[in-house]
Image (cartoon, rainbow, N blue to C red):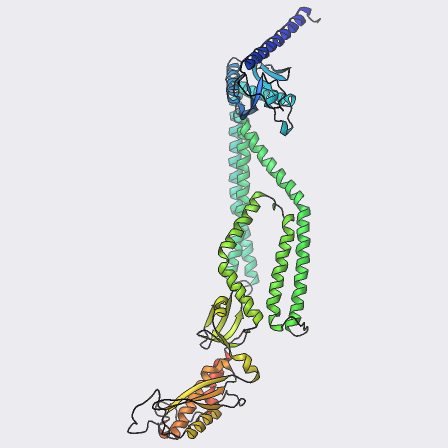
Length: 579
């Protein structure tokens, strides 16, 4: 059919009228802007005429039918961005009510763009509305605004169609029912799979036997298995709920934007995680190489320090006693250095969250490490001064016993009563420490025991009796020889001190027990009274025990030999573990 020439003419005339109206509107806006000479000029970067629009610090987003259309940043003809957006939204609602939502077009004129809907001007965009720093252009923003507005108007028109809404509601209800069915199937599958795997695991554990796997371990394995199944199926349920919610929201015009944002969020999250994992691969490889090299150096250092401790290597600057503590220190320094070198290559190390956690941990260590550092430095002082060694019999303050552990923070001592005493290293450094084992390795350490005897007893006899008691006591060293000193001459008695060297300091209680028993027997046998702590007058009868009463009931009548007297000590020492 041939085209109507009159129709073409009418279209041309209509376009000319719209152009003339746009020009008139811009001219009026220019006149209004020119009238307000007191307003500040637009920024230099704005492409629009300073008489039409000016850039402001305020920005406002035009939202129509739950969709973002455009962000306005300029004041046009004295109207702020919020006023422009609210006015455009009100006009769009009126057009939707009038069913006049097409066509959506844009026209450019002297650095501005007028967006029209149904031949009515809805919104004017200027160069001041464009974010130049983000790389936006007026033409690009105009085209994007027209596309968004068309979609929002189409959805607004669709929301007024009951037939379409009923159809989409039925589709959403079907999707929800299908989701409930899938979740019911997943619930039954969870129970059946959990029961089947539990029975299979119990059969395998029963086949291995109780000797290999104890009941608590088997119970933990079963709990871990059921927890893994619960996590897997719970994740599947959440995915079903998330997908169904997204699908239902996309069915209805007003909530379609929410559904699209949910779908886009999930896809973008998966995409971002995948890209981050790919980008992190080079850094992870670098971290793995650094850790592998550090592990090799740690093993090499451990082998060398072990050789020094065993005497296979004898460097002048390192004593065998300090080899293992030095190994631990070098190992810690190597790992700290490895972490420092690998830190820039760790995924997320440059994020603000990672930096915040690092600062928080550093603050915690700083506030709580004052006492910790004191104990650590005291441990280093104990170790490198070689004040004590593991296995030494020492006295630290009021604690006497064998050192069983030298730690970074504390020292453990097993007392003569088999008590394990933990002493902080700072306390060890601040108190006097006596080591009975060091000198005992060479010449022995004297252990004193004292008696007080009256002046009427010949001192030479007392010396001989004390030395004879030492000879009869097992567990004492022959070299250095026991000796007796007269420690003091008191008002009513003489204090004699017998100095002996013990073969084994850990048997101190039992050796001194045997020594004291022999002293009492010998002094009783020779009729010498032990006057302790002191006396004023001589007793009417000598304070000695006759030999025939040494084994009075319920004591055994058989004489106690030296070996028998020492037997409890030997039995007791068999259970001592110096670790």
